[in-house]
Every structure is written in C-alpha cells, then in structure tokens.
Length: 586
Ligand code: DGT
Ligand code: CA
Ligand code: CA
Ligand code: ZN
Image 1 (cartoon, rainbow, N blue to C red):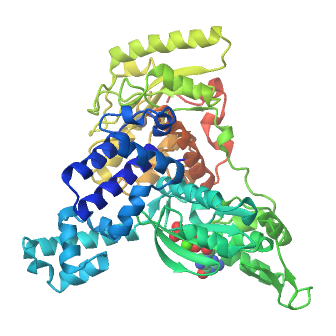
Image 2 (cartoon, protein in one colour; image 1 turned 60 degrees about the horizontal axis):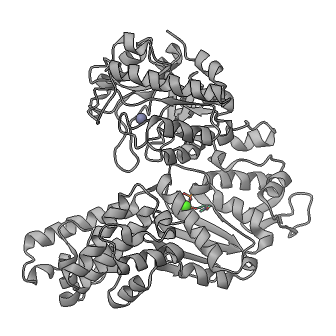
Image 3 (tube, helix red, strand yellow; image 1 turned 120 degrees about the vertical axis):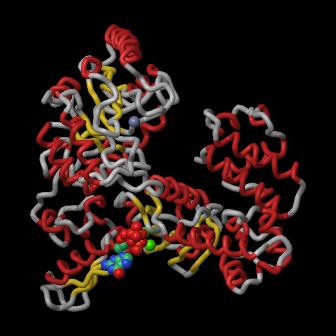
C-alpha cells in the first residue's frame, strides 16, 4: 500500500520535526539520509521489510527500521506521533520557504511564537521578523516572496497522477479503519472520477447509515494534515502536501443521485437538471421530487440506489464519467447513441518504450517480458536516438546490435509458442532545425519510428511548427511522440500550432501519440479529439522506462475516453500486422 516515496516522506517529516525541536545533528541526519536512500532504492521497501532486511540497508539502524516497519503497517509511527505532540506540525510547511531552514523556523517559533504560514506572513508584513538577530530586512523580503510562491502552489491544480493514488489510499485507509458493515459504498467522485488531467480537490463519497463513525475515522486518517470543516455528514480536510478533500456521507438509498451529483461536472449536472424539469421532476443529490408539472403528483419523491437507475428513469443510457463534460453527451445518451469508448483491455501492445540502452532502467528482455506478462502481443523498443544528450542514445551501429538482440528474442518466443512480437524502433530526436538525428538508411531498417521534440522547447510558434512539419514529412517517421512536450505542473506546452501539426499528420498518415505517462498526458483529451476529427489515427503508449511504468496505461486510455475515442481510432488495438500495415510510407 505504501511506496518507497511515502516512506521517504515520512522519514523526512520526522527528521524535520527533530531538527526544529533542536535535537542533535546526529539524531536527525540519520532520518534525512535514510529518506534519500529509500527514495532512490530500486527495490520495493515492502519486500525488504517483509524479508527482515531493513537494517541491512546502509545507515538504517534499529530505530529507523522500527519507524519504517510501523509506517508500512499503519501509515504512521510512534515516533512521529510523539514529535507531533512536541512540535507544531504546521512548522514543517514553513521550512519549504526558500532561505528558511529548520533552524530559522525553530527560532521564529521559540522567539516569536510563530507556528503557521498566516502568522509568519503577518509578522513579516509588520516587519517583526527583522527584529530577530540574524534576520535582516532582506531575509524578511525573501520570506514574503517565498510565502507568495507557496500560496500560488496551494491554489494550483494537482496532476491526476498525484491525486489519484492519494485518493485510493485515502479510501483504503477509511475502509480499514471502519467495520465492514459501516460502509455500503465508498468512491472517489468529482473531476478525479472523470479522469480530468488535473484536479482542484478530491471528492470522496461514502454511503453509510452511521455517518458519525465515518466522519470520526476520516479525521484520524494519517494522510490528513488539518481539518478545515467538520460536520455531521460533510467535512473538508487538507492532506499532507496541500491537496484538499471533501468527504460526503449519504444514506444508501440516496447513493445513485448523490454519486451522480458529486461526479459532475457542474455543467453536465445543470443540463441533466433541466432535462428532469422538462419531465416534471426536480433533481437534487437526494433524489427526484415531482414538481406537479408532469404526470406524478407534486411532492412525490423517487430515490435511486444506482446511477444507472437514475439515468434510465430520465430516459438516458448510463454515461461514462469521462464523458460528463457537457460536450453533447446528454443528447447522445437520450438517442441511445453513445460511442463505445476504448478500454485498457482493447490495447494489444505499446508503441513507445525504453531500455537501459538509453535512459531506461531495465534491459530489453526484462521490458519485453513485462509486456508479455501484461498480456500484450507486441511492444516497441524505442530507445532515444543520439542527439538528445541523454546517456547512451542509440545510433546506427547500436540499432544493428539491438536488431540482433530483438531477432534472437523473437526466435526464442516463436519456438516456445509465445504469441508476442518485439518490434524495433527508435525515439528519434527532431533537432532544432527540423532535421532528424539519424539518416534515412538507418531509419529504413526499423519497424516503427517515433519522432519527438525534447530540446529547444522555447522556439517561437512559427519556428517550432515549421521544425515539426519538416520532420513529419520524412517518409520514415510513423508516430509523433508526446506532441506538445508539456510536463504537467512543471513545463508548459511548446508554442506548436497544433491545428497545423495535426492537419499535417492527417495528410501524411503520421499517427499521433497519447503519451500515457501521468506527467505528460500528451495529447490530452481536447487535442486527441481534435486529432481524430481531423482524420488522424492515435497510438496510446506509456513511454515506459521500467516495467512498473506500464501501469500508467490507464491514464492514457482515460484521455482517449475523455476524447470519446473508440478502439477503431487507436492503432495499437489491432493485431501486429494490421497495425504495421497502417503505418504508411508517404
Ligand atoms: P475540480 O475539483 O475543480 O477539479 O472539479 P470538480 O468537478 O471535482 O468540482 P468540485 O470539487 O467543485 O465539485 C464536485 C462536483 O460537485 C462537481 O463536479 C459537480 C458537483 N457540484 C459542485 N457544485 C455544484 C453546483 O453549484 N451545481 C451543481 N449542479 N453541481 C455542483
Ligand atoms: Ca473536486
Ligand atoms: Ca470539491
Ligand atoms: Zn520516450
């Protein structure tokens, strides 16, 4: 349930609290060091703990091991609980302000009584900080700047790839904390259930006849940092890391309408409410109530235990949450004409992935075996070409060697009767002037060529668009990888004129990628829809750099579903020879 990163964060929390408290260097450094070590460990910490090997890790003594052990089973530790009773945990956030380490935060606390961001801001604005020895006017100004940055971050939307694992953990923690009969259902609703690429906050919905017990348990989940609002059936909390979460508890007989309501989006709900009104019903999160304008007598109430029953009562097919954005899905559901959206099970193989020949973490056979284990029938090895400056990009010579490795593996699987084909390709650098990092003779030997942009990302719109178009015209380029090069929350998309690029892809038969890596989600739902409307075909791949990255496929499929894509729109739903046949030579 808890990852290496979760453990590292917990150890860092302990280290910071110890440092603020004023413990000796030796005491807190052990925790910082263990945190860094575990964050970078290739092995799963759960396995190490289970095998009793925690103290074998360099620098991990009995004390740290004990904390890890407790954290892995409960999400918290005795030591952290003790420290939280001695040091206000809100101080930890202050240490994230540039220039304010734990030592300075400790002094602000002990000498000025500051424990929260708001108090720090007030003190800095009143110039009370510079009265402290060693805190000049400049430090004070920097603190104000840092606070503004932290506030901006708190208001920023959270990438789905961060929010979703948190929501699932929260749900699991609540399930574990409650007796099985206390919860009839518990689900994430809101934008998370609609798989929107970023979420503003989490919305968790529970059905229970004992709401007080659910609320009580919620407030004690270790992921929760602060309770912002606590009521009988609704509460709002801030989780560690800043994401906020609404929890609503409803009676089981209200589940269908409540789940529908809290899934949204708001515009979809408003449309649905309009439709209900036309039929003489007022729709709320509790159910339908007859207005008297329709056939039912005014005041008659209907409850729905499932969403399906609610939609059906209104004459609609059930609408997949990914489509509930009021983009025309309600009339389609009314006409029983919703598209059959693609699912993860439709994907037969991936067309973008790496090995340790470039910047991947596993060797070719391990990656391919992971693909086989997932039931894929093909997988494209597409290491970075030279020209990017990452370690060990592949050139013509290395690709020849990879071909021998790939051939040998394919022969072995054929002999063993394994229905799987390892394809050889490359993730080809589109250089700053639109030329390609490998010559045509080399590209001609490959099964599939994915071309992408990783450098000179700040070129103006005309330059970068022309650069991309030039690369697309090369007869050997089959797929345009992560077209906008954005990284959610870290790097904006390039200035690429997407309409022009997508039109060119449609004209030239270049397939466009939905890169499923949760940092990328590139194309996103809007562009993926646009691409298909313009006549493009799509490939969904995780860009895996290690076997576990293949888990990210669901995020790419979600973008496709939000774009209303069907299996026909996506080339890697097809058997390998069909799929290869769709990669046209221009
Ligand atoms: P977010 O959090 O900004 O990513 O987006 P949502 O969709 O999760 O929005 P949120 O958390 O404000 O509310 C959750 C759902 O509750 C929303 O999708 C629809 C429903 N909802 C909230 N406010 C209203 C409202 O004023 N009218 C209606 N009809 N529904 C609402
Ligand atoms: Ca929300
Ligand atoms: Ca909300
Ligand atoms: Zn890649």
